[in-house]
Image (cartoon, rainbow, N blue to C red):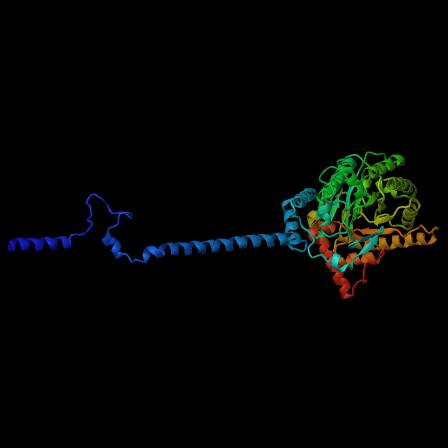
Length: 501
């Protein structure tokens, strides 16, 4: 009996020491097969807090990604605002010098710049004048041909020869953009190379020879531009809408398509038209007006290019009057209510009293609306500043044939403006009939900053035109000039406002 009780006690003790779950020697321990003993050695809170820590780390990563994305977006946005602002110094001090250093041929660089500006405008990332004071202050307004312009600055023909980028140029701040020159038939112009830089002088010599896509091509381009504008403005793009725009029923000038701005189209004769056949030459100009006059606010008759043989001979009073009468007649026959104004562009080299009087007489007789004084010159001005010795390469370029344009022409331009203003006003005073009105006078040649623009305006011009300054100053040139004009007026170094016509 004692033995039995003793055996029972030993059995009970054995059962107490035996674990409820035993490890199998053939079954390895895994994360899903954890013994109670091992599980018991891990803190009870470990399983509960592990997902929370992971969520915290994930949330922190998301915040970092959001901040990085916001930084990239904001940086891109402010970079976009900067590089598309004409006030940004990058345009003058980086873009222009870089293009000049990478592209040796000046004409190729010009074409690349034009294509770039056209592409940027197409995609809406073009440089534009932000923060303009034209609309708010209205202190630079000037009246020309019955239009109140935002300012008296214009971009001369040559930057946009074929009417590809007038809207992109308007965005740079001028009140007038002149495209062309356009000839009746397409022509290649003179052989290349035909454009040469003089960087030390901020000057250019060119002998383009009026390369042109032709009047028909430019007219189609301007017509498509008008219809695209109408479509984007929600007016449609049919012929009736076109008529309303051209007749001024939609409240914008038919050329510029923008209030306070005007589009000028420069026209010229073909090189192959005989120099001694004035009737054939007149027919060239008339054809251009017939094709292009509908889409222009101003038609500019170019008789002053030095690179087309015989063209400047047309500035003599008799042939000039005959040509201008034909152009004015064609302009008055343009199929729209408001007819385009007609101006004639004259050379800076024919500056004698008889030359000026003959041109002014022809302008009055043909009832032309105004004169653009200045073009490139055949003469070679002295280097600037006085006594400066040109680099050897530029000294050789100075011997190239063609028209010279640069800041050295400025003093001549001011003198010519005064002479033409005096001659035109004298003709006005002696003319008969109340219908006679003052003639507009635009000035181009060497104008490089705002103070110079004010000087030609105070000399008697209605508008100051820039070309070479744009080549060297980039897309911010007009904005900079207007700022300088306002500063000069505020400082009392110029007249209180630009003269009106």
